[in-house]
Length: 371
View 1 (cartoon, rainbow, N blue to C red):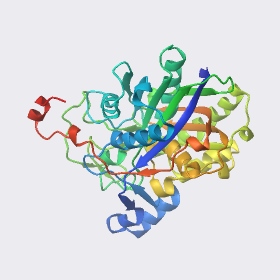
View 2 (cartoon, rainbow, N blue to C red):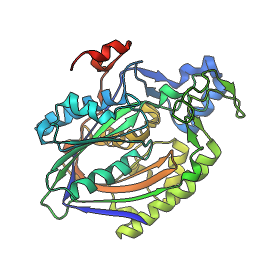
View 3 (tube, rainbow, N blue to C red):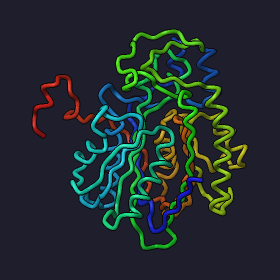
């Protein structure tokens, strides 16, 4: 069992940014028809989402979130010892997006920076990675974990199963070493590579670099090219309603906790029906499981942080809450984490359309200019 317990490390702050552009799910009725859209809304709960512009990326959103968070906390960039970017939406095929964030934020060259290629489980896996790094380093006292995706950019616009589902967001989590023995982070992770085809963008990687761009009609009646997102709905649904409740119960058993020990369940916002099924099988009260996909869609790895920012970002009670988060999806990959956080360290959801124009290249000769 891949269980991890980290002592004397705390989550010192979280923030999340979405673009200002709002797409209403009902706006798809001219494309898919009233009946299809109404059915989709009822099943998924998604009534609107936020979408990025052509050149805006997940790191742009994360940069805004991190800048605001560090400003609020009074933390200087030179205090950050690690930058980890966990996402399936990098700025470039190479280099790692973490380096761009390091450069933009002014984080010193002594910091460690790299990417983790993960989607909906990026938060729980990222928590394990950063906490483990910090616990085994004498020098890293503060670190930033970036998560999120711009999944809508890889969806075929005429794919009724996915075009209305995804929202886009970028989130950041600040880690800090603590002298308080009560500060601990627990994580339980699982993986199943036999489901690699269940959620996939098969073209554009180095196995099929020059895959055809033209779409074909798939067996489920949706057009897609090999460069588009593909979701095998039935297999994904079966995975989420059986394996996810099991890992939640195993996590409670391993940590000697129960459903009542947590103030908030910040779960990946896959769709409303799946969340209700998970809650039913684990007896998690829905009032403890904040829902944000109705307004923001499925925002992949950022969705748990987005939900915390939505629920507690304007809280004035200055209370410490015990949070359990759960991520599950592409890979297949899933897991749980728990941590305490003060509500004063949770920022409200930010909206921003900033694009890192220095990183937009339309001509290879632009790369010869010095930074």
